Image (cartoon, rainbow, N blue to C red; front, side, top):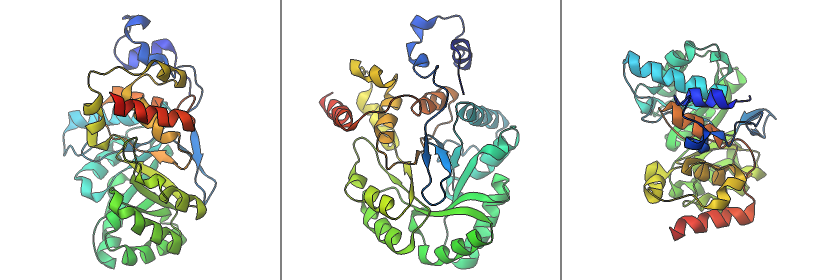
Length: 307
């Protein structure tokens, strides 16, 4: 998908301001397609940047807020993104995803992911059925066991659901370093299609062995907590990007943090959460253009420490 200068200005609501006032909007305007990564178990390609919905899509019944989320999904799709990750834990988020997506022509083109967040076989089945109804999908693309809750019970159900065509992929999630060893043990024993975990420029525990384990056993990875719950932005508030960042099409701190993550070839998709149209455009921009090499990755991390 190719954005023109005028289209990007219009998306940001700044048509007529001139390129000199909005230089960060143009770093990805001439790239034809967002980068993609392969799901090892199937060979299917996924766009590298998706969307998380924790807190950001939990808006209850507000029609005005729903319209904003609809715009977020529309712009994500226009820029080549497709992965939407949710959970029953996230309040009204699943319902909001389903309602917003159903109003778009691209509804059937998204990659829908959600989670089981309960204990017991039947409770898990009931929750998955409810999630599909809320998100308005007949077949869930990815069903994950949220934070490993009763994972041994749900694993058997998910395998059966996949065989029956009720889900396409199954996986596991967690969001803290202390869970990585457990995730690795399950990956080795059970070979999930996906595993979702935390990883960022300052939180690199997964580099020790988790990424290698995923690669060895053909498990795709989804990265959560890319901004460390916003603490990375607090760290760089008022600070300038290094001049050399522009060599990699990095035009914002958000893209700096996401491109660091994406430059790890073990990452299949990263899912920053937002309810802001401008921010989703910026996030998607990280999936375009050149990615840092190994030396530059360390340079990026060191620069963050130095400021």
